[in-house]
Image (tube, rainbow, N blue to C red; front, side, top):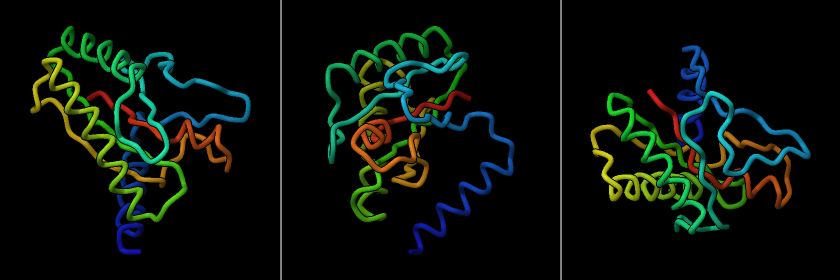
Length: 148
C-alpha cells in the first residue's frame, strides 16, 4: 500500500509539472505496438507475460532506438517499465523495474553510455490500454522511452 501511495504522489507531481511526455492512451481497436507516436523519437518495446526477457522484435526496436540516440548524443532517455494489472502491486513494480533495466542494459550493450539513461518502474499504475483483456494486457507489458 505504501508503494502505491508513493507512486500516486510521483504521478501527480509529474502531471502537475506539465510533462508533455505522457503515454498516449489507446482505445479499443487501436493497435500501435512497436509504432512510434508521431513526433516521438523512440519506439516502445513489449514483453511476454510475466517476463522481462527481450525477444527479437524488442531487440530490433532497441537497435533502432540506439541508432537515434547515437545520432543525438546530447539527448538523455528515461526508460519506464510497465506491467499489466495481473499480479500484486509489489510484484508488478519489481517486474516493471526489471523490464526497464533489461532495455537499458541492451542499449548499453549497443554503445549508449549509462550516464545518458535512467530507469523508473510504474508497475501496473499507468496502463496504455485500460481494458481488462489479453489485447490490453499485451499493450501494457512494455518499456516506454522518454527523451530529455
